[in-house]
Image (cartoon, rainbow, N blue to C red):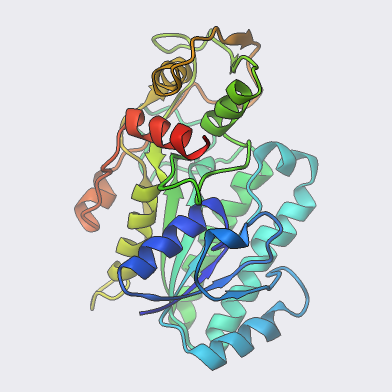
Length: 317
């Protein structure tokens, strides 16, 4: 299958591209390399800023030349804190970029799209295991752009688009050093970078209503996430297929302190974490209900927390 992968030079995108090529797909990557790293990928790379005024024309030319069977859209800004500081840029890039992509897809009758969404669409859920029907009330501009993106994909069904939204939970780990997550945006890469600098990892709050007082999240290995994308593409090939949204997680939560204990084991470094105040907007618990993706796609995560943390540590060293 001929796949167009936006954001394919990023941490997640490069894993998706690598697996897709391994499974025999022909992959073309669109990435402006604002955060992506070209050396991660072997696929053809086209430099297009999706939010730019000329992006529809450039995408249209590319689609006309190649004739893609499906698109996997990962390109987006994704820093929650930054989205609060510069919401206009997030709406311009995340929603404007998707709109331009959809316009080009419509022009060339490319009717299959897998959209990279996020558990940030849920906001502060009250359920132990949050399912896809939980009403989304995102609490930051990043989550808002992802929820609006889901609506855009769903509404494009009016012209024949067949879409899947994948709501990622906490993605971590790595297949190799080449594909490592080099951005210090999430707990595991942040803590690894702190240890490598001789610093103590920081825990923001140990007074949450959880067993050890620290926040609980659902950590999913990036290789499992890559597999979910290709299973979603296959789903779009089924004769009878409805628009669908799937959580991508493990269905199991781990606390910040449990993650740091796994990091002690993986690194062989003994350390005492720094306990800091809570950060505003951090839900005590955010764990996926994975029943739908298991039943419909047959997806089940293969890696546990120990393997996730160890692979992340090994890739960074």
